[in-house]
Length: 402
Image (cartoon, rainbow, N blue to C red; front, side, top):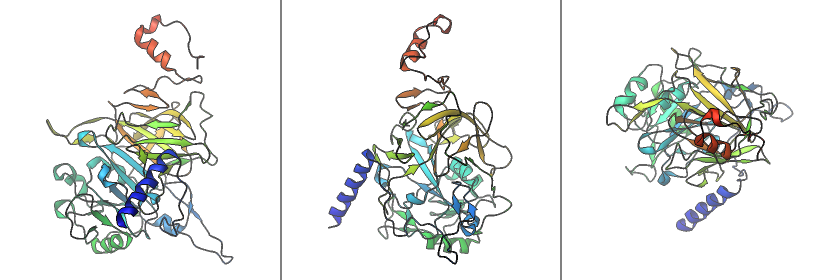
């Protein structure tokens, strides 16, 4: 019986990869926090810093969790993904990547994980949201300085010098010591926070209420003459093992996430991950030490360029993060230097090496190159001509060709 259930679930996720998944009836698993007025109607009198969507004041004041999700094929699917508001994917050693979810509404989740180790640059990204960091260890030499700071609240599943677990985690199956078997849930996290003395509400000293700018109405990027179509986002050039990608669904205006060529689904709901915004953030990087496979990815202050993708279109952007305060938000600007406005909803953030390439709608974007976007769009033919001739010799205008 158990074998049949597993096979059925795998078939369900495979189907989701080719056809946009319908939102499952979660019966409260992917929770909405609400309160009712005297007429029985929901009242949302605050706005989420993560999504720009209406939420209750109680939820707005609650600290989110930053969960380290492994991306290994054997670790899929995972619990809690339906509640992820901001999803990061960043490189790690061995051409692999790792993912971190920022969850605002987590207090009723019955299972979260599985959970894996963290890298220092994930911590720096997480701090922008003043979260409780949920992780299962990490390379001590390269994370101890940041994780042992008094302002950083983390629950470390392996205990030791990187911080205690305070009873936060358990194994499935019980007693297992193998990877991909560590989990937690809302009750365990709340209990561990109390034992550790962590604040359940945002800390005024560190919390930044202003992060993304959100558009009042749908931002289709039509105000940018050089915006380009962007329906298929293929990140396999940056993440060759996982082949992380997204595909746009015009019917609901969302991008559907795939991993290893299959839909990336929440194990609890069967629901495929979808996003309203995609940010591709190029970053400088270097090996931690000569001969080391561990990386340092400069997300703290070293601004470079990137792309913003939403509603089937894309623009080139730059990003910057103010120095001297790890809790300051990363800010994204258009090519005129104006801060961009995201659409309300969930956001996928790819932080990629500035030496890697990726493709959008079949057009490859090489390192430090954004193809000088034009209203008529850059064609593969134009790109080939640029390689064959010196720039001064290319006199014909191919910008009108399809």
